[in-house]
Length: 356
Ligand SMILES: Cc1ncc(COP(=O)(O)O)c(C=O)c1O
Image (cartoon, rainbow, N blue to C red; front, side, top):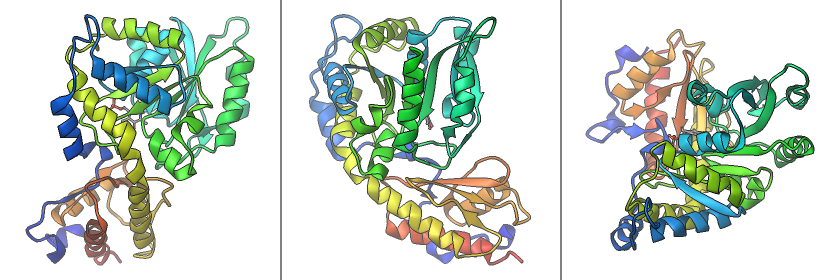
């Protein structure tokens, strides 16, 4: 297949279309302007005013008492666990959740165990979760339950609010706090046509990534009850996550929270357009139908694995990441316009044309 097609005319002379992740997005002009004029202080001493403003604005947008600006969403999730659970306790979460698949190495430092609960489209099986929360006798106590929406490994699926509400109610009945990995919470809210706070109301703490579809260069916010955020602030310092004149970055984060959510629907529409084109292209190719900005392309019937597809697509002017051996992941974002989707489709078509 691919090796027969070194280039496609549509890509000639143009930079590759980068669908590897929404993390590749660069700051907007408005972000740079806010960064240049942001009031600054020492956030490790008596506080950085712009970081404090971002924390308040993000907490309000998420419907929580308080917020904490952190360098990454990984740290936000880690702080939620540290502030709300002890060593030798466990965190129950869906088996494909980012916190489980990519972040559970934290257990080597925290002494907290991650318990994977089977699920569908990112939603945990509630009966299995119920059992996990029993924790009687010699079992580990479940100290926290975590959800994720939109769900990265479930191809950007959005948890139904009824599911989130059920998980929250089950956990609350046992006094167990619920954390939401809301790295792409604004995408979920746009897909649900509701406000981010309406999604986050079904959890106690929530992390929000500023550097994905929202286009800030770095950073995330953890939001929740003030006492939990105060404890998290102390843990952040212990982890080396307290930064000094960090208002420079927080200024971009403010723009991300206040302005950038409004355009995410465009990314969702383009992801759907790409998925539709791929599903109509060749019987040996199929794509998930995205609810948000992430789709996965199944190449298992093509005779080539995802690494071979990724390499061949790159030569055709399209960057897409292997996601396991048989799937590619494509993520739309602010730097992808309609013409880029057309070029992405033609890159796939060039390769598909060589399939039997
Ligand atoms: C759902 C989810 N949670 C957390 C993270 C971690 O974010 P960061 O790279 O800011 O640590 C990611 C990153 O891809 C993610 O997709």
